[in-house]
Amino acid sequence: MKDISSLVTDLHASTVKKRQAAAGELGKSGNLSAILPLAAALSDPHTAVRCEIVQALGRLGDSDAIPALITALDDPEPGIRSAAIAALGKIKDPAAVSPLIRCLKDKDMTVRIGAAEVLGKLGDKRAIQPLTPLLDDPFSDVRNSAQAAIHKLTKNNP
Image (cartoon, rainbow, N blue to C red; front, side, top):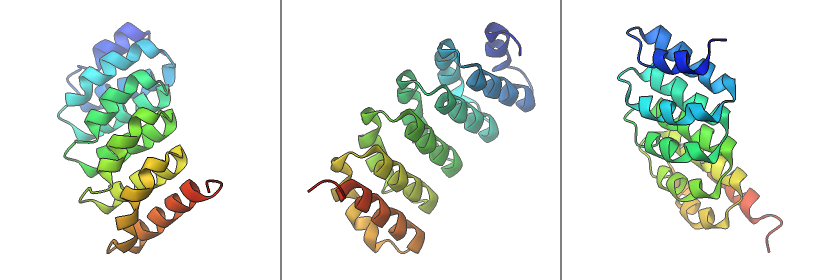
């Protein structure tokens, strides 16, 4: 593996493949000093690079990545928003609950499904009320995810 500083430099390389590979390697490095350069590179114009950056931040698994991942929840690409939701689910920090609740109203059903699933795993009861309208979502997968999340949040909690 390259050293961290050359990987950080490669986040700004001219080719998409090199930027994407650098982000992936930084995520695998386990080096938390990679969080800030990865977060700064989230403005990359290429979707595949942004997706790899979001996944790398999730792999690093540190709450310092949460602000960048919350920003990624507003990405125009639903795949990036879904990846950010999954990354927040890996970090398991209560600071993600409110931004994830906002994602329950996303126009993309995969984003709504992901948000419901992660909210169920996080176990914060604040999500119960915002999940309830999804029980009437036009898509059965969304309804099922919301129902499963509500079940997780209410079982063992009188």
